[in-house]
Length: 48
Length: 315
Image (cartoon, rainbow over all chains, first blue to last red; front, side, top):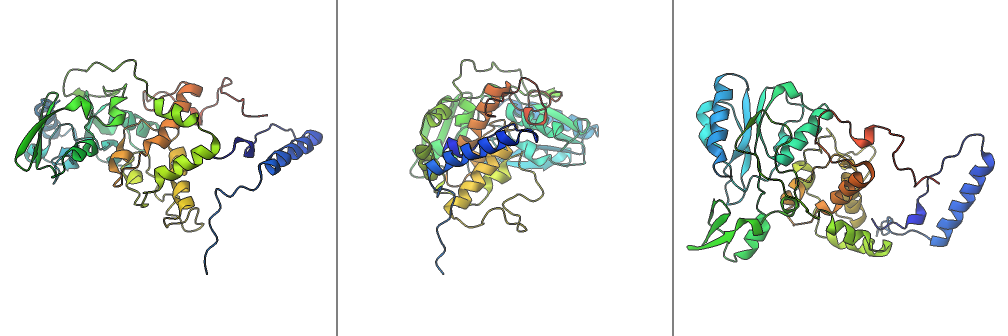
């Protein structure tokens, strides 16, 4: 529907897998940062 | 298809007279050509108002939601699939219904026809596959099969899936129909192209909610767009709000939509609303082998878990 695929991510992480959680979060953050800000679903600032 | 009406009236009369139903839900002639409207007939004296032709595209399952009476309902293929969906979702009880099945050969696209006559249309009559359109005293004959609604052209369930009575012999189902050519075209686009495509698609939307109101699936007592605490979605014509409405509505129909085309037919500005739901229908078919409303005994894919459900999106 026009949202870049990299912005959405699903993972199975057990509560015992803290290191995997850290890795996944770092990964996802890096991917999203690389895509830059998403202005698509942001409304234009309202004129007062 | 025209011959059905005598049979519909005959069955309806019998059902009403025997007291098997409190009312019949069917169609009567609309106030302008090509706009037949739903009607509720409660005594057999009023049966002559019932009509049947190729302008009965509205989905009558929409009028069943939470009804308590015993109802006789006239149902095309798509209506019958929505009745099944209603039964699965506990919006109506099967025992309350007598379904008068209509083997359907497709409904005409009123926009296609209206677009052909600059001077407006005074009257339309039909005979088998021929439409005779009167416009300012000039009569033109057209082939009905060239003027079907898009969803009817692509329909592979013309016969009702459940029925108690039939208004005519079952018709041959269409085979080898490429139902999702349009969806594949959009799937092939890049993300920014899709964004622009949908922006153009919904730009004429006036947020009248005719698509939602015509849809038998949209029976929530308060739709998410009408909620004000919290307000999920702005109520104006802001582009983002409009987009939110269309996408969310489509997702609410995932695995439930029967592609009856009621939304597209109801849209006053001619938005191809089915472009949203078709993709979800295709996904349901590809991933779960599911088409909505084919059997009251099968649970829909989104409320069952199967080990074989696709999980490739989880990393």
